[in-house]
Length: 324
Image 1 (tube, rainbow, N blue to C red):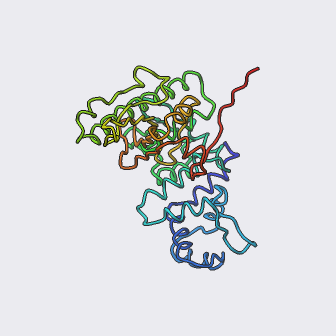
Image 2 (image 1 turned 135 degrees about the horizontal axis):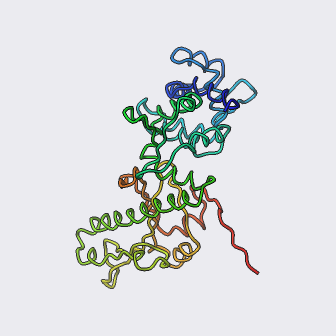
Image 3 (image 1 turned 120 degrees about the vertical axis):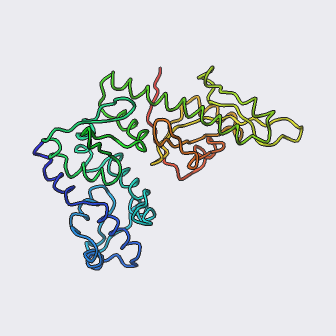
């Protein structure tokens, strides 16, 4: 583990306060001259060079003509999340860039996360004295970002509940034993099934003024996994002929960090067919049994709005099919 000592030393010099101060100064300064920013920074925080080095390694900042900071997409995202010191949004965005995106720290972070085991619905680990020392800087930084929690009585570290979906996706993308992969897939299935049940209750409340429609809501996925949607609900109005208007809902339990979700070929085909009566419900998961309906995103006609039109959603092809 000696090859990572320099990386750990860098994390020993990084705190959330330093990053917050840096972003706050950029938000308040019109000209991003490096010397000017450094002078302002040193009035409130330490380790300017280490802060800059860290932000470069997670692809947040670049230098223009070696004297001015250059705007990047990641930097703009962090600046827009810099509101007040206790704001969790900035911490969440830093976690997303540091843990879930590929960067110079990816291998080192994976070594720490590979120490965690799935037990009783949580990812937990016990670090011996040597590993605590080896990961001390990264560990403390992740604790400060609320990505990790520590139980002093059991000496156990755990990944915070709000990262549950994100870390399931993370482990799925890494090297896993068949048993571990099966556990991860099972947990995702349980979360997805519970999300569908929660959305049915949400729909019943939405249609509370239409009890004759509310009682007809169907949990389609329970009996037909090939339907291309999970729930058959209704609009809160009737058409010109006095007939109920169906609402076909595909539920995706997502991470509140990035709302990443997958659409199958069948779901896309059904969405294309049903057009404006097809809806995606993107429901963020805070923990295994807690869903954030205040942050629910609903996308109507996703085939038109995500596939046919240019949108702010990033799209990645992750599966190819071949035949002769």
